[in-house]
Image (cartoon, rainbow, N blue to C red; front, side, top):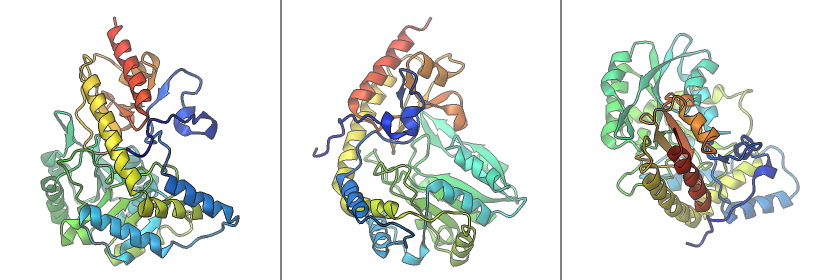
Length: 382
């Protein structure tokens, strides 16, 4: 492996949200979806070159960035995207909110499969729209759709379905049969899908493949908003850049109209970072996947040897959704933080307090120390 993912870099001096949260405590922060790896040198060198120019200002989207993004999606998923389908936006969460404003009229609702990344539930409320939760089934640690529950909960007022694939926090990569089931329901009910596919370049299981929802059939293509971007994949989280892929011209024009005067411009450095990531950082990305696979295997082995805890995934990403339902803990995240001194994300924020989410996108020595702490804390419980 060419790249050194074992390198530890102190981040407390960089105003890091991840590391400042527990800065007054001896807690290893493993909560927010922000990896502790130095991002590719191809990105940092491109940024340095741009900074050395000394002038910034408003920037149009580079045509070359859109071209390389289209090429990358085709190579990875065999989905052919037309250039005019793409709307560059300053972040995936922005896309969720604009989608709600675009698709839902006052009084209409989105369906949100839970547990899920909290901004999916927050977006409809931000736009003064409603939402209905349907609960994903835990099938031996894999989060899956409860199709019958979805059908039961659907009403004429539900006009949008939020899909997160690969799923956050569970890491499920939904297969073709699962996506087709959702597609059939949405076509029958005239529902538009907003599909967050931000983690789709981080597949860890060799026997799964990411299938973009919009690529499946013509109905999906014309009735969907797909969100992708480089930030999670290349560890440039916080850079304001993502894409909304909207093949339907009317839907796309409405989406763009709803960004006017509200959604900020994407800055020049974010464009530079994204283009360098997609163009030049393939080797770094390949090495990252290898490293994450190894971290995942270590995590699976040791977590599943702790009484009361279980873990299966993730199939993609660097976030582990740890089942604590048999631990007897009333507040698992509090135990991890206060007793084990490992800063996990409270599962309640995603919709299930019996779980914690742990970010294993870190040097192995940090992961090993965290696992040592977790094992010790659970072994000393009264």
